[in-house]
Image (tube, rainbow, N blue to C red; front, side, top):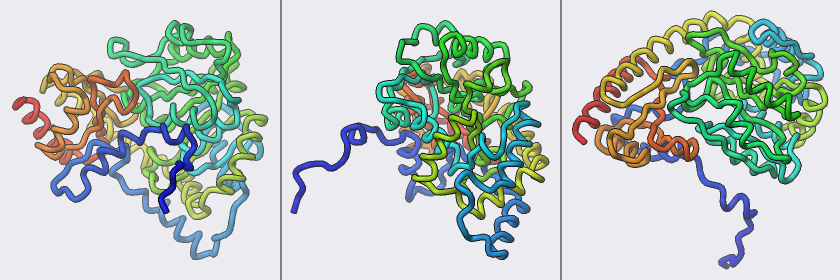
Length: 388
């Protein structure tokens, strides 16, 4: 019997599918494709990290962990955060191990938002930010950045978007998809807006280890910002652990307590063997991270030069592993550019408008693929542009 009524909630029915996944799925069945589409390292998780998971299984560690995660892992996260981010958290009450950074953002928003509360979302940004605000009952208020300012938000732009309902600012630096990163001085100006207006900062710092030209600064480490910052990170990007789905979140005890209620009902705990792997990664994986960062820097320099040489103006990204070249000179929309490039040269890039309306006129190219693949992709892309 055909149902006459959709059982889906209205806000779910109107939710748009991910623009990244659309182009990833389009390559199914195609051969000879080079993907610069998905934000996933081409490195395999370091062997000793994988081995730690294997050993945990051999030792029979197959039960639930504490809801917030293995105590030993939270202690190691606290040490790592103190050493690299220069801010201290209590492992027993201010840290949760989550199923990827994505879950951390989800439960953070669900913990802090009442219906109608507004969150300032800096675009272009990762595809899930605005939908997760909506799913949490909030209202995403888009703050557009632009190429002229290297896609960096300013205090003035934030001030213009504030209302009495504004609860938080969601920000990712280094940014996905642009690779731009706020300097410490620029961060302090954003932090001043948060302090002056009693706002939270939801800071996605998943790319903190992939910074190439400057020292990294965390929002939580700025003066008087620890108590109004929710710091999200994980193991996917720096330790090449995307498939393990493991992240973490640090925040003041009251906020973490609220997030833990949601986490324990929805998730129970992150996968046990993945937590043992991450524990090993934090203890011994810094050398691997250093080598990966060195390789990414070389690839960034190559792809930025190549894109500019073929006439696609591209700023130099300070972090992450994405470039965001402007394709307006081709006369194509970002969707047309990505579609025709895939059809004619079998190279996958993501249309900039997948990351918000402000991304129109750009495409995201990930350089988390081998140098040989990057060189071939740039050859094909240049041929595509020359033949337009």
